[in-house]
Each structure stands twice: as structure tokens, then as C-alpha cells.
Length: 205
Image 1 (cartoon, rainbow, N blue to C red):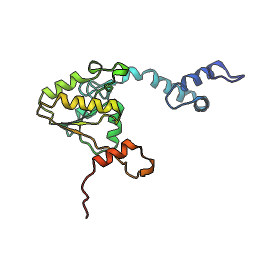
Image 2: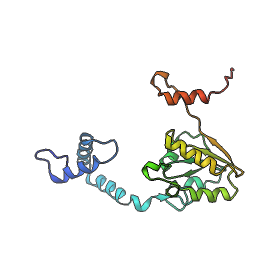
Image 3: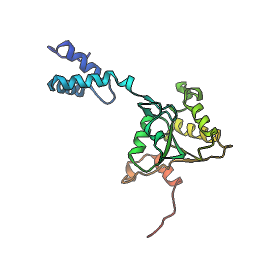
Image 4: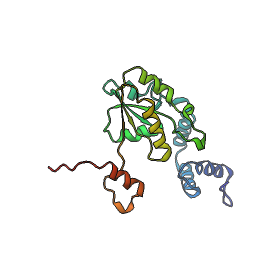
């Protein structure tokens, strides 16, 4: 437990729990704990009630597997989204990141992981059966594979591409390479190699 001499037990316990969150060390946890202690009791109570009810209020969409408060998420229920284009991602948080770009108007499918034999993650552990059903319905015309640029992510993308190769559905992969505003000296060899592989013709205005 991250405690200091003279620190009351309740404060030490709070710091211990906060420091268990990703990216938060003992010092940051202590600053957060002290900040909460300085806030009005009503604010802290509201926060605690939100945290207590988080798992009951949140779940996953029965259709795509993304975050949802109801049976289906707002994206699946949106009548103006293109249901023929489905972007396949590893985790539900990937949907939130892609939606920030506001460049995709289709639907999503969350695998809830990626193939990783070393970690014991196989096809049975992924949300593949639901994707099979969506493909079988005939409503999907394009699958956009947006798995991570890792060995496991690439293996997952290849698996999905092969799985639906005999179906009447176009399979594409998101581009990899140099990010906007990126400098070559700070990029790894893998990213540079992919950028060269996926080069496009120069179009002058």
C-alpha cells in the first residue's frame, strides 16, 4: 500500500485503488485523491454513484459488440449509416477512436480481442460467430479490416480475409504508413516499410 507516515487509512486505500488504474502512478494517485478530498461531498458522492452503477448501466451491443446502454448501440440504430460497409476492429474503444475522425459512415464489428496462440486466444474467444451471421445475411458488401499493426493483428486480418474469401463481399484493409505531420526520423522500420508498400500515385493540382 502506498502510504506515508501519518496518512489516514481511508486516504491510503483510495490512493492504492487509483494507482491501479492504467497510466496512474502513486504520485498522480495521491494528487487525485487529495483533489477529491477537497471537493464538496456532493460531487464525490455523485462520482461514487456513477462508478458504482457503471457495470449495470453499460454493456455491449448485441449486433456489433460495441459499447451500448441498450440492446443495440446508437451507431447500429442510426438509419443514415451505411449498413453495407462494416469496419472490423479489435476492441470497443477502437470504435470510439475511429468515430472521432468522422470519416466513416458505415457500421462496425468488434472482435473483443485478436488471435494470439501464445495468450490462448483462438477463434472461439473472438466475436466471430456474430460476424458469420451478419455476412450470411447478405447485407454486408464490404469488410474493412482495422485490426492493429502487430503480428497478432495482421494474423487476425488474414484469418478474416480468408474466412470470407468465398462470399460475395469485398475485403479491404486500412492503410498503414507515415502519419500526418510525422517525421521519418521518428518512425520505426515497420511503419516505413508499410508506407513504401502502400505508396500511391502523385496527383498534382
